[in-house]
Length: 290
Image 1 (cartoon, rainbow, N blue to C red):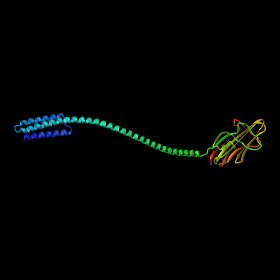
Image 2 (cartoon, rainbow, N blue to C red; image 1 turned 180 degrees about the horizontal axis):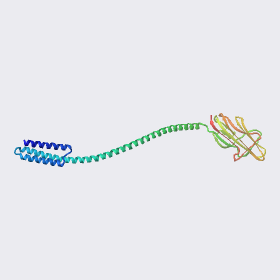
Image 3 (tube, helix red, strand yellow; image 1 turned 90 degrees about the horizontal axis):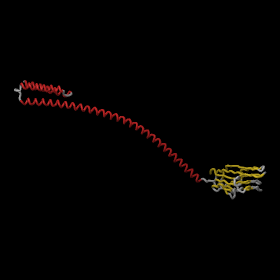
Image 4 (cartoon, helix red, strand yellow; image 1 turned 90 degrees about the vertical axis):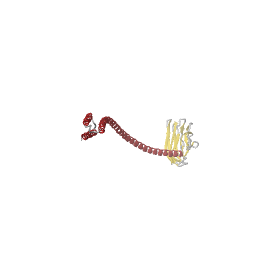
């Protein structure tokens, strides 16, 4: 009966020990109490050892040793748990720092993406503008090429001539066509210095101008007629007085057909003067073909 009571008490101690371990571990006082209880049970058991077999006492001693060993292991586990908790705290701090860094990088990445999107939009706009400019440039180039072709195909006509270096010409008893022998410009060879006649090479609008001088005498007359195909366009007329000089000049824009002729006649009883200073001149050029 006593043996059974001692065995029950030991089992209660083991149960209590297990409960303490599950609730957070054994303290040193708990281990000491277990050892004292084990010794008391040992004493009680000794008083009755004459009635208990040696195998039961050996098993009880083995159980006691196991309880003590478990208590030591629990203390070690508690230390390991505390160490792991500390390491976990450090890891959590590092993790939080990493999370903050990730958030910062995400914000920076968002900002970079917004800037990149803005840059792409600007680039697209510039590309559109460049496309428009290229189209306009191509159009302008085509227009320039067309103008160059038209200009190349368009006849180039211009002349500027002087009368003579000999001095005075005239007066004559009849009108004469003035033959301007000094050629300054004769593009297109439309003016003939042998006849004094300009012949229109193409149908178009032309500009003509003349200037004449008479000097060194009194009562000298200067009179220049402009003719178009034998039709008088104008008469420019003046008189020299008091041994001075007189000048006449005029200009016209005329529409001519191909083959039309323009020339200057010196009027009857009139004279003109010219020398190396080119006092009497005749010029004209094509404004545009028609």
